[in-house]
Length: 74
Ligand SMILES: [Zn+2]
Picture 1 (cartoon, rainbow, N blue to C red):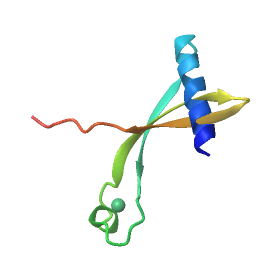
Picture 2: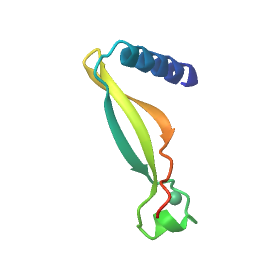
Picture 3: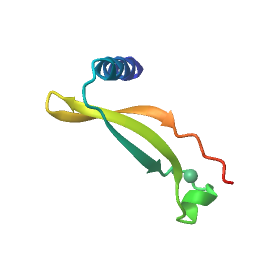
Picture 4: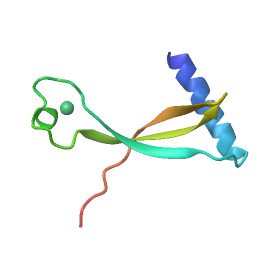
């Protein structure tokens, strides 16, 4: 699982270096912990988390790139 994710990340880097198109999306996630205030109150869940993906053998494959840094408000 981890090894596979590393391989995908490497492939993603190679694509970017070769100038091939890469999609980007941001997702929010529910952590599922019963005592989490954010999820329990139905507010905006955790994240955003950044993903980049491409069509690998005809399937859109997303690679998880970590949490997007929160911008400090003015
Ligand atoms: Zn939560």
